[in-house]
Length: 124
Image (cartoon, rainbow, N blue to C red):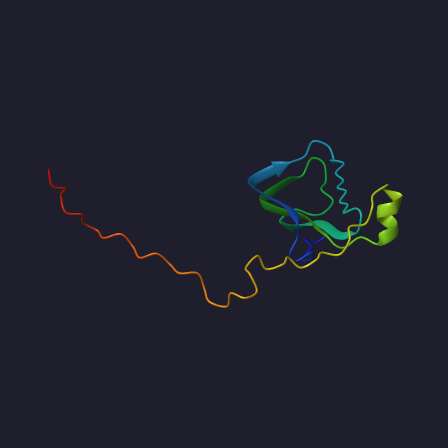
């Protein structure tokens, strides 16, 4: 399975790359991956291979191999019923934050003048 391009802006992403001049398997490996984004989301995993087939053969020596793997997940807004199934309450929509400045003040606050770089010595 080729390395996925989506999700293109994941919330979680794991990438790994392996290179070897020679690689030989004594037995055919059993490999599996599982990705999930719950509640609601998209996820994918896969790899790009150079000189290494998707199904390797025991006893064969592979030369100049490279394996690039990507696992990615992005959370989306979950459907309301999924939150209920998990025993969670949906969040109310965000309310705008009120402006803390008084409404009558349309002028910006004065900025104090910077302190001089050099102070004369104090008199004794």
